[in-house]
Length: 112
Image (tube, rainbow, N blue to C red; front, side, top):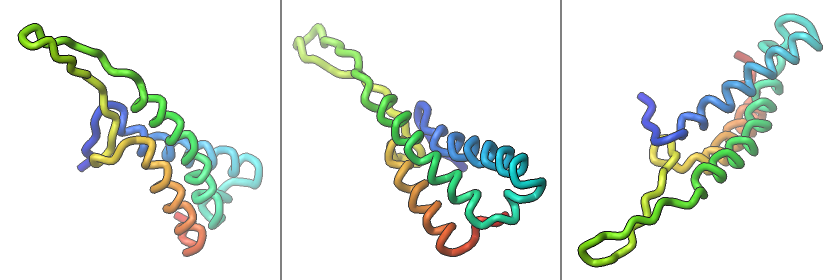
């Protein structure tokens, strides 16, 4: 079960799109079935998606919130959107993705 707020699901979708793009490109350049047989293609796709997840997460989570004023005591309240997956902010998933990519490459489990 996936639990996300806002656009937090992008922590899953962006690496998936990079993996699909890597499969299309590597199979067209090196021949059909190369992506599944190469141990470096999937970790590279995950590693390349990591900065994109960080930039998108930083942009989304650093937007200024709306300032509302409570009419009873004139206190300011800031309403701000949160974009997270499993309660982890979206930009921090870039580190998780990068570590996963390095682990996959080192363990030679990049083949599907």
